[in-house]
Length: 133
Image 1 (tube, helix red, strand yellow):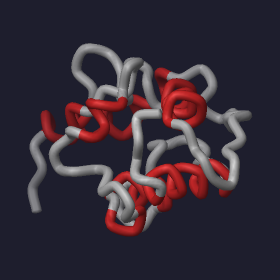
Image 2 (cartoon, one colour):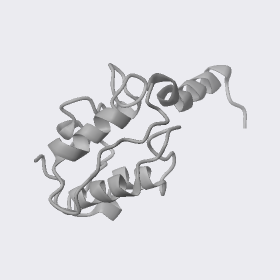
Image 3 (cartoon, one colour):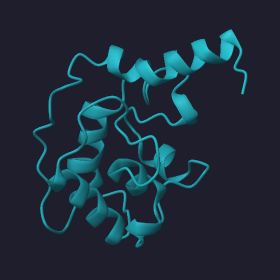
């Protein structure tokens, strides 16, 4: 398969952009989710702000895949196409599949994955209906 130079440059920039833009790229977020009653405003959105919502990733004027997670991010996340979140069904939510690596590329891209607690917390938020609370 032959790939044009422009395509190779695009892929290189896409795959390295998040790593280059975030000064906290190797730091694990200190956000700890509760076992239940997960609030989007208190836990999910702040985690996205720390790990995803910056220029070159899911922030800025032209975020990859058109997903802008800068505040406020709830409507952008829930209304994104393809559908990322299926309320009540974390295993059928592309967001979870990207975060846990079942669907490639794993997010956050080129950076330290979310902690087990954070992944479990986002799963619980979706399981509880993915509310804007």
